[in-house]
Image (cartoon, rainbow, N blue to C red; front, side):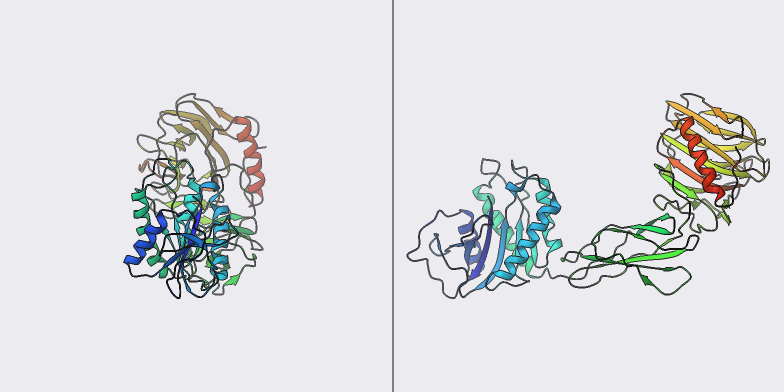
Length: 496
């Protein structure tokens, strides 16, 4: 059924004398009776979007007849029940057409206005021509349009064809339309709610912002105001990104190494909403590894210790990391910092680190007393463990050397350990022994072990996590790019 219905109060309740009788729709007398019981004198008009002629239904004698729409009277509202023939369309496409139609009808019907109630009815749930995208668009109509409401079809049944409602369900549906009409009368538009999900990803002289659209205030969001400032400044600047309802923006022209604050505010036809949460980010010059789930370039130019992919901030377990130019330093026993990424495989973990002595300590990972995967040192030698098996590399810690170290594993199916070297890199392949890595959060330093026997500190310049197993050739390609990245930051990585 493709039907839209407008109802109005005519100047006098006369019948359509002399008009041609048309087949009546059974639910319209039901709605007319229901409305009459609520002492609203109404006639009903069917205005199908597929017809060019307008016809009216007389609530007095139950007949369709030719009736001049633009005659004296007051338009009370518009009821909409349509969508079966639009299956296969996207919710966005159907919504755009419906919203345009609502606006045109409100402005073109005699007695219509921007506040004329519009009630969209749900299609038969589980019906043979009910499309989920169309239902989504209908359900969200009051969010996009002021003075609109939605009449649910929950619990209503088919009349037998799995397309139209039964007689009793039509009567129930009519009552729901009336409830929707009452709700639509007060569904006035307001400014949009504030964005509460603003986040940023670091780039070269730029920050990529993203957010989730907030509640619209019953009027479509047409733009977002994007503002930024140096964190040390009190003056906000507006970024010129044009007019767009897109939930993201790339703020360019920034200075690498400087900390910036960002905020956004949504705009609709009513006005500008409140500003979002403030996101603080520092643009950096070096690029992100393609396909990385997380990628940290650490140091004083990254004051929040945020990663370059999603902005994941390394959170100290106890004592904050100390920051220097081009690197941070872990704080010994229980002095690491965790990401939000778990150790569950498949994983490839890469770190560029420098020891502070020959004491035992954790470089990175998630190793605890019973599960985890980590790169650590013991007796002055690098060791790599993805429980239950340990790999003693034989490569000694050197307090003056930056090492590129990696572990790649898939729970119970593969394992590769790697340490770069000018001529003979260490390559370990313990085999299928990574079945107890667990799901603890990955990080740098000691994040779970918390043993006084492992209290060494480490300088960390770069930390990368992939949600995939990498081959030796792939790890060595990353190593080559890492050397270039870190040389630009004043860090010389051990190797050719």
